[in-house]
Length: 46
Ligand SMILES: [Zn+2]
Image (cartoon, rainbow, N blue to C red):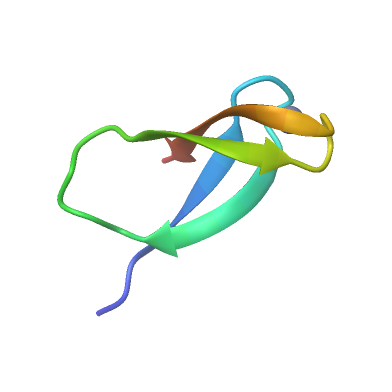
């Protein structure tokens, strides 16, 4: 069973990335947001 989670930009809340659900709880990853046109924090979306 593959659970995909979305990583959404913390500033514009756009879903930019998806990843496989991991065992870690709440993850925050710094990634490039094409909407903000800069690196922002991305959180997993429930
Ligand atoms: Zn953004």
